[in-house]
Length: 449
Image 1 (tube, rainbow, N blue to C red):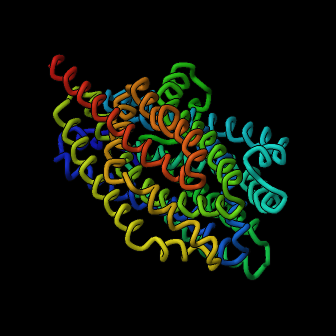
Image 2 (cartoon, helix red, strand yellow; image 1 turned 90 degrees about the horizontal axis):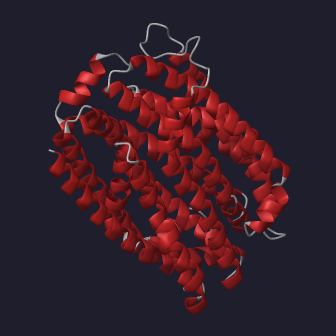
Image 3 (spheres, rainbow, N blue to C red; image 1 turned 180 degrees about the vertical axis):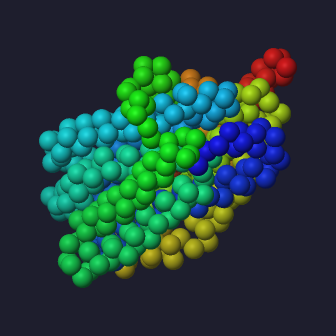
């Protein structure tokens, strides 16, 4: 676990070496994390049916909203942890760990209770039909009952990364995915639990790794560990964590609204299977996005620590390297979507109709991905250095300023194709905004120097 010498490495070792050291475990962990959703979709699509994929897609807004509350605590607190360690404020660092635990318990339980009380009308509002509601409901009931486990699992994983343990964080995610891969087909096929079996497998996998994380943080020999006196919520820690975490929270919350509009638009201009096609496109996109998020997580402690230590040149280096790597990942995503979209869609379903609906979605949605990596890294960079307002604006600009208007206007002219076209339009415009904001940051940094 974290020792004081870890901070010396963040502030003195070769920046490229540090980024690779932190990013590789994070990329593996985030890729493995994305496999949760992909595996569920594949097993559900192949084992339950095409409509089940549509039912699963209906749950995306609720999943996004749940992730929003998780990121509100986890992302904000992990960034704050890195900043405090860079400032050598070790007492606050331990208190942050305890506050993360308590906040995740409170928010996780509150979210589950409210959603479970109104689950049916919520799912209908999200675009469910009489055919897809049973699938969506069966899946979400299990996920919501285990939501506290999910919040704690992801929250403590963020703390592992922030306290200098990216490898343990990676292993926690990988093992949870492995457990899920083993259990999901057993529950779905052998036990006949259908879509509900996939959800049960996910929660059991996360619970197993949560217990391991608690064991790691309970070791009193480690510098940062669970101990008496750190579980009392402290106003400054809570407010500072939430102020930083509000950017990813709003991004996920807005994503919830966006997905609702997407689902409703697809049902209106197409049908239930078009929602399923979006489910496939979303899962494929999510895989590449999570790789970039892994790179961002590798960048975050390095940028945060060195910004806190006023080593601006090292901050700029890690940003440049992360942008280059993210761009490479998204160019690969673009190539896959354009060259083998039919093969990609076939992984999720045997239904030819659903495959043929997903292929044009894959081709169009990924059109501007070569520049999306830059936009994602820039937004995360502002979050990493504690510039909450800039991070919030960048998080919301793509969704609210560009994607939302596109979704409201383009389908009226191009039907389902209009939904797909909204994505590259939003990606290109938000990347331009990111470029000018980053240039402005560089100018201000030079003036201060």
